[in-house]
Length: 125
Image: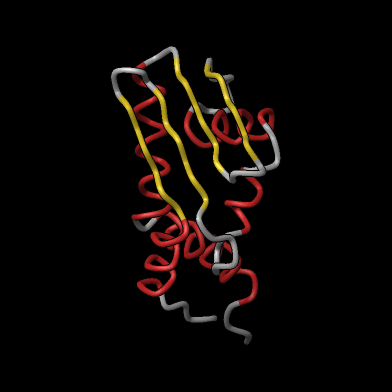
């Protein structure tokens, strides 16, 4: 199994992304400062478009149910701006992105995938 330096990856992601959240406006802005970091593929994927972003959010935080929010993806200035109608969806989204870029979300996701495939490709008899 490949070993990742999670602290180094987390540090690079923290430098690559800036998050601004505003509870009064129920808005969230994710600014991409740098794309050539390990694990940044997911950042680039988020910049593809509004519908892709809504689908990703629905999958990650709302059991694949649509989320009522406005999404603006600005590929030139490299940011995503989200404006929610519901405080709970706003909070879940803020928590998700904070964990994704400043927490251990990526580590947990990779380890879970490795664990799932480890059973198939693990020890040979």
